[in-house]
Image (tube, rainbow, N blue to C red):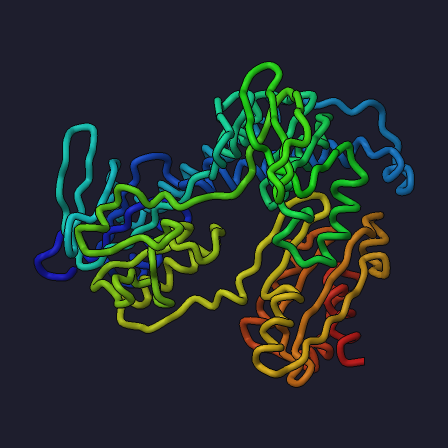
Amino acid sequence: MSEGFDYDLVILGAGVGGHGAALHAVSCGLKTAIVEAADMGGTCVNRGCIPSKALLAASGRVRELRNAHHLKSLGIQLGNVEFDRQGIADHANNLVAKIQGDLTNSLKRLGVDIIRGWGKVAGTQKVTVTTDSGEKTITAKDIILSPGSVPFVPPGIQVDGKTVFTSDQAVKLESLPEWVAIIGSGYIGLEFSDVYSALGSEVTMIEALDQLMPGFDRDIAKLAERVLIANRDIETHVGIYAKKVIPGSPVIIELANFKTKEDVDVLEVDACLVATGRIPATQNLGLDSVGVELDRRNFIPVNDNMAVLSAGEPVPHLWAIGDATGKMMLAHAASAQGIVAVENICGRRKEVDYPSIPAAAFTHPEISYVGMTETAAKEKGSAEGWAVGTTKSYFKGNSKALAEGEADGMAKVIYRKDTGEVLGVHIFGMHASDIIHEASAAIANRQSVHTLAHLVHAHPTLSEVLDEAYKRAVA
């Protein structure tokens, strides 16, 4: 342990990022403490990845068992399929409790001190923690900030947590509204539209931008829109925003044109999920005590080593990771950042390779991607003087997908025409979130389609959609 300090490392925030950093710090021989004011596991474990995937797993099974046409094609017939809303909610809650317990126990087992309370920076290498019994100060050679994020609620929207709510409340599935409006068509909106429509709710999706799924590659988004939205009991409003949302029974939603701001319509629905993204939880962290100012979007400025910046220069012994940095608001990105921060604390220079970090929406079928969209790649290529190539392959030509009766889907590979380097891969289809990691490794290793086209994939497997796409790139 560093002489003169209580700890080698103190981490503020016990989400997935803070947890990953703590585990790695212990493996590096650092005496570590982690400070948490709320739930161990943060957003991912308690209000995000974990409970939402439990809901998607259960509701997806209901959708599958109720799809008589699909089952009949496989030679299967079922009677009436019923479900228990509370049972599905309990499945999610029980999983949260288990993983939260596992996370906490893993820290205790490795000797990480867990300090419950609100932690903030109180000067160089110093943290104050406000607990139920008062305030105490601890010192550390290094400090990692991992405060996470909270749902963003746009102006004009009132949230009561019951009839108008964010994903924080939606994962508890305390009710199944007959008609639910979902504001936003990103990951959160798509996943909950999948859950609600599978369990029998009528859904209205409201997207302020001029196309659904604005963050996704356009070819993937168009196919996903047809399968995930158009074929289901989901109505959509595009280029329209919720000017005002008033909780109650019914919920009143005033719609307006996003560009002109002119009133368009008024909806009366049973419930409204606000899925308009997340903002950093960066207030009251004591950053002013070390001369750090948040950026214009209230993110903590960091460099590629995860060191916190003040006026563009690293602040000694202060690091930040996770959603609060605004780099990639993904749990696994936070964990990767935590490991990189610890590596740099130990004097081993390391950076996060953001282009190779994959993302996924766990709809049915799934959407996944890694690297650039075609639009972003072409902009970069135009600026740097090289051309972009794209290839596509389809699940309807994949033997395993046909055997499963799940032939909706596509894989798209984006690459440099001169070197063949893979720049981005986008997949929509069965188990897309698992298949994407092959592409992630290819981007991490800066591999070329010329090399990848000669890899051998097991047959018949879904991964052959990538094999086919790589081969088409060099045909």
